Image (tube, rainbow, N blue to C red):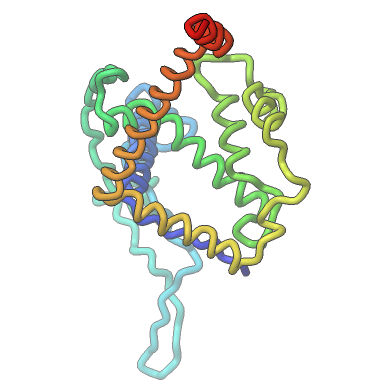
Amino acid sequence: MYAAPCSPSSSIFSEMLELNATRVSSKRDYSEEEQLSIGSYDAAKSSPVFFGRYGHKLSESVAEIREGDDGASTRSSMFPEFDPSFSHPAAFGYVLLDRKPVPPKQESPPLPDPRESSPREYLEAYLFPVLLPAIEQMLKAAKENKVFERRRTKFNACDFLTEYLFRNNPRYKDRTNVVLEDIPFVQAILAENPRPPLPLSLLLSDEEAAIIIQSFYRGYLVRKQPEVQELREYQREMRNEAVDIFLKVEDFWKKHPVEEAEEETEKAIT
């Protein structure tokens, strides 16, 4: 079986998982609170004995083997004898555990201003709540397409995320049936850079793909060094100055064409 290499070590990825776990646990706590509320009790579905508790039914097939004095073995049920002074008849054969009390809900703080918030605040408040459900649905779709079992499949994670996020944009309600090829900016990108008939995943071997990925990552490690960043900033400033000089020269010659300069030179000679 082909196992896709995926070992994220970045802290931001871990924070995304923690936020997603918090989101799921908050939904679970909310459902448990509904179950514990008096208004949600239904006598037709359960006994009052079980309300507010977890009930686990003991299997009737579980038995205890005992050996007698004569060496013969007998099987007896592990259920204790029922004592009405100690327990309720409806709880016979069950193990009951009290549910943990649901903590009071805390009011969520207001969202920060997207123009004045820090990058971390912006990610947690605006990006992760939208991106994490999309990644969750992407993993489900990848499993349905057997991405984790086969070496190559037709499933494209980037295409799925693009289509999912475009469809589920909370600002628009009429995009539920839009496919990837009908998205305007996708059409513009494909018109400028059409996709090749065969993707690189079918043309490159594992060794060639690994070389490309490793070389890009090594370049990233070099580019993020402070000395290299300073050098790149200096080069950027020099390029901007060169462009400014070029534009000034070009503007000068537009205001003083070559023909006029030649005529003035001839008049001065005569």
